[in-house]
Length: 633
Image (cartoon, rainbow, N blue to C red; front, side):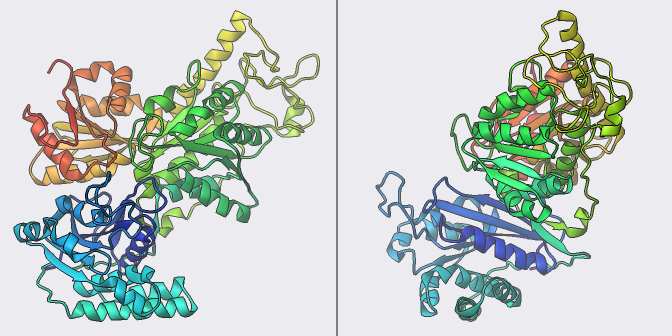
């Protein structure tokens, strides 16, 4: 049959090339004209431990995980810590097979490497019974031996792609082309030979399944990109020329991409000893007159909060990236969660004066990172981009023309030396950097000078200061300076409201029920809304990216228009629902929560089921989600 979408999953152990294999296969499918979405699952181990990647391909845009998958290529775990069933972690070699059973769709295909997995061990699993019950089509293939015939066992993943292509009726030319692009010499020839042998073997299998690849075409050239790519490319196009950082999953990808690309633009990257040094070094670079950024995961960001407060007090523009993972503390280092919202909004002592965005996908990550730099440097305040392990790792096919934008190197509200001659100075000649009521420009913003400019000398300190930067504890000065800084948030909100909204919507504007979410969960919610609408439910959704300053007018309009609203987020305490109730308390009785915090992102089907059960007054049946009703229900 011809399908609208197909979800292919490759599983094995960390170190077995699962990520590179899936990325290459996703690229071949994209080049054939299909739209791609990938989901990556991996343990916090360098080698060994069950890992898999899903590749979902469709003839229409696919923007979230599917509900289950159709095809499993199981390589087994060649780096298994223990193959003993009674070991603490069980038989790890078999887990890439056995831990897939609950999510493989009826009628699905399993190809497993019988050269890696012992047939007697496989026989002791419930594979045969599950296959009969669910009409699975199981193909044991000795991929390891095929690879070894042409060199090394590591090429068994290439053999797996050959068998996959044969069983799906796919021309192997695209895979062959990619091998020729990425390899050379003997390695290329060996992999091509493995691919051809495996494809021929796959064609000889008794193919009784009913699964095939969709057909698709692209009008323009596409690229496979993650949220990390979007953030990095947005920063580069925004004129960022300095980054400092310390590696920590899942922030590391942004740091790595920037380190690779910055030298081509005349920029500088520095890996430092810890996150404190990282945050302050970037802050110093910005003070010196360059667009700069830094970042970390939640645990590292905790160390950066003093620098965040310093940026707010000294009014030094900076962009920080905060990559969420399941916490607290080390938590689940390689699993996703949206549990850092309160941490990012309110970290550092005193009243927060910062901009916070949470993009939902690679394209939003690009646009909102550019916007973060623009606003940070126009309003002289820190701007933060929040994302998570889900957005960091998922690949999507994106039209390349989307990124055809002009660069934006402008440093914002800074003065030239000619302008400094006319600017306010005190009797000592110091520039009044922190004027109470600066004329012209944006509300709350006092223009700044760059160190080394003639006539631009001032003091910068973490203490409250009078206009030239000297420490001041005068109550009247304190109030005037604090009011001025907080006024920036109002100005930023007004500017955001006047431009194109960062909040995305789905569904019928006149719908009776609403679903509200934020960040990377957005597109999964939107797919759920499409399903619900097709089933005749009156529902719409909004995905929120502006977290500070809060988009009060847009959310008020949305919540005013619905009778009830389900807030969907990946944390245990309903942090975004709490933020919404804090800002818009009058809508509290309309809000209920759907929460997931087991390290895995939502699937559209979970949201569909929970929504239908909750509006009927019931509790969602799924064990991996939690429903919290509206206050008073």
